[in-house]
Image 1 (cartoon, rainbow, N blue to C red):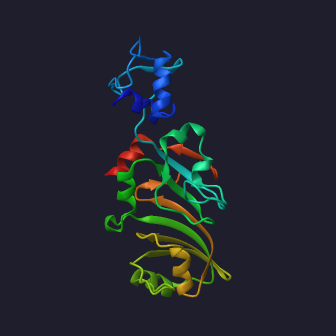
Image 2 (tube, one colour):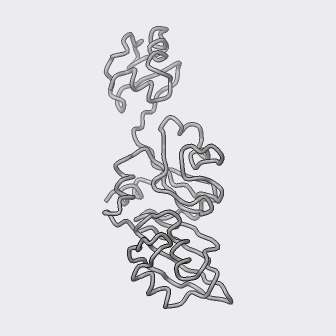
Length: 236
């Protein structure tokens, strides 16, 4: 990788600004002052120091976030805070983005990364990746709704959903607590599925994407990088 590209990727400014850093003698490569922006370096093996700061190059980042309500699953929004706004400024240079989306008023697991290939693997309908949610429903959910979800329901725009799994955990009074597994990600899909069977979602939280489970030790708004074993399973 060219030295100027590495430094630009690491947030040290534009190519022009990076060139100025090198000209001023602020950049060292393997113990020697860098003289040429086109110098080729191994981002993993070369020791690159800028103004006394050692560069720790990382191509891809994978972060598990427990999204709170009121936060938008995007990288930019004119009105609301985005999931990327919850991250430490250290992560800004990696240009992370959310894999898929969670509705603004839905809580739970969201994956942030800059790995476009993995994002495609997890969101492509052809890959049939399970997404598991828990929900509180206004109304008494019964085997009738379980069968309807298994068959696929017709949404308000005429779309016929693919088969989904609905598990009833508890029914008390006029409320039900359920777990739903879907392999799609249509806009407000779970809410619209329950609306199609005359029920209302009062609370929704995503627990799992594929093999990746939400770390329950994470409070709302908290996050951590994926463990090596979590990432390996996710990529299988």
